[in-house]
Image 1 (tube, rainbow, N blue to C red):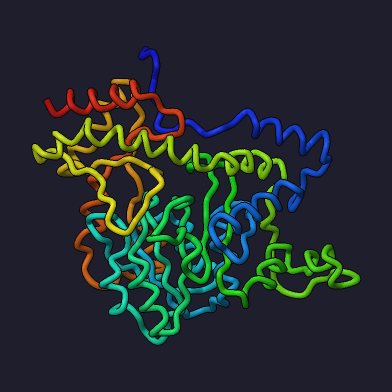
Image 2: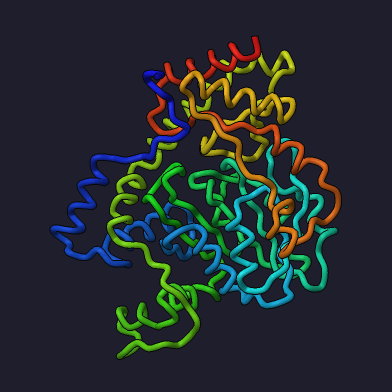
Length: 380
């Protein structure tokens, strides 16, 4: 048995977060949704990311579903997105009856190829959903321009992009709606959770209603109505205030956490650069004007067989490394609910080569060195 296993992920926690969670239970005595800590998180996101409205949700999946409801997705609508993404990105719109139109990705960032979007637009297209893979922004200037010219909504899947920027704008706060994840594998976590960021002011009031099971309960608590009732479709997208308390402590230290992750990411790079110089692997690229958040550190091998053998090699050395998405357009549901527009030049071939290395807040320099040494041992 191997001692000192390096896992792929260690969920982030802070002592302050534990204290806040206890405070919610014993002092605030409010652990349901929209308690004090939930409101603190909402306000923190709004203030720090210049978002007109932010609302915590039970997951990024539910944030995306809420977005689909807000833009009134109906049967027969089409939504453009990359195939290289998590199933929730597509499911949120399929649930409302939309057809998903997949387009190829860029080989440098694994993001949707902005140059291929316009050709995929039809009279049925309702929205573009850029997915900011690994916290590295899609080419948002081009995407927003396309959307404006064609009258389309932009829904940012920024599940991995909290604290990342495109130029001087935070991801999730650029399009009409942005969606975050606070799953335990993300840079900031509440176990299970997410948030929806709303830039388009016409959606704010309805977002509160849909999130509150279709009632105008939020307006009631603000004294805007004398009683609340069922006024629209909706569901329960409110996380417990316990989860929010755990998250809020991390948001208060967001800069420190982000800086520490970036240091770890940057430590990997020089240790593996010689393998890239030898043509054995490819390292991540961060294009201008993107500012990433070190959500993940991945490498690309030359083919699927090499990746599989490297994963096994690392596992035998007590190191957790994993591949990522299987492209949605190749899945059973993807074939039924979507179609791939154009050529699959990079999506499948590059997804089979990508390998994610251990990356989490608090990973030690010696752990990063050990991962690097194991990879070198494999290739040597």
